[in-house]
Length: 315
Length: 277
Image (cartoon, rainbow over all chains, first blue to last red; front, side, top):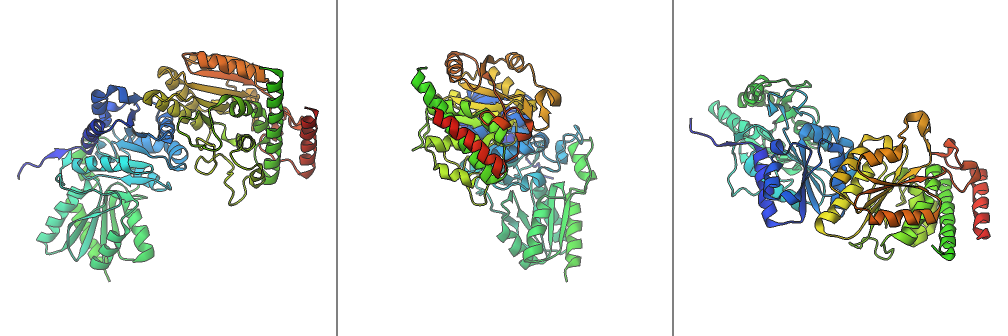
């Protein structure tokens, strides 16, 4: 097998902040004592005067960011997905989303692939929680290239953004010519029997599932859904109409995430079988990321299996 | 402060109190007690202290105000209306469907409101964010906030305080409206944050204790606060329900509207006080 370049999306985030910092100085970056892990440390190193550490106080950080944004400046705030979305949920709701302030939350260490730190740090609920908030935009990049482009798009966005990044190095799917737009899904493969809608690190797995299915004579469409809110309804509806069966794939609980968003839309507008691949209402545990992805069934072969099951449900 | 100015401020505060009573009565709900206790502080800030312009509520160099105890919205609305940000008639629509005067302040709906608040403990952090932004980007405005004495039981207040002093935000001045009562009873019964001054001092603030109904003391505290190289907490001893005799120091008036009879009594008292000026 040829060597595949792997980079964590959090690394893309850190690099993008530095590049952005070279282009403009009308924004600040904040962290809650995790700068090295979230990669905001790269920005801190390049622009120490424009970086503020809040200490271990995520709730305060979110409301401070709201105050900064209210003065017309942009601000990135980072912590682990667990603490950003979970501990500071109510601050995000009332200080940021209700007044619709353009705070960009760079939440790293999303999903089971956090690995060895175990369940307390493996956030499987953040997309679900953030989806309930009016005004919130949620972006879950598939690779470091998309992560970088998403950061550049987020700072131009006139409202709150929650960006989910991973700790684990994942294959690079996109090249620099890739054109990222908030709210726009992209079709990576076309097919007619079933559509795999994937987000985050599951996108690379979905591409591998495409090959598995192709080998078995099954034609799958593969969609990268980086923006989970607002969902690209058009891409989902045409996938349902064209292929009649959907599999969603995400490194997140099956309750409330991408699979739910797709199901909610299709249930109302164009019912077809939707099978969800994700984590089924349980906590994670410690172990190397790669092994956990195997154990939790978040691999190409699992997607392929779901795809066949979805096709079987077609009327 | 000369006599004339003081008299004028006292008169204005009385009108603000009337506005509070009108609003809360019209809404048939709301928080009169803690609104009346901070009415003098808000009056001083909006009529004497802050660089603001009712004609241009979003002017970039304005001083900012955050009502961290957002449930005192009737006081903020009555002050803003009296100051000319919108018509005092609007106070009669408080909390009604379609009104821009929400139960708690909404910065996107109400001219003159700089931050949406209501969930306790978050407003001071937002004020800290504004002060940090001003300092970082070289803007000269100040940020004022009013906290409740029950509110400071929220841990986030102290996260904000720790950060503000660590980042030397001398452009931040917070009032603690120390009226001694919160919904469930006296602050001492519930979970006392006393000694309030010592706590803020321990967190790196300069503290000044005043009578929060005395305009001379408010003024001299602010003069001192503006010369400080630290963030400042002005501990304002106040009377909950101040200005309406039967509401004073009565915890029952934390979150209850007067009925028609009580309303008339309150209005009568306040109008009599106004006439006496």
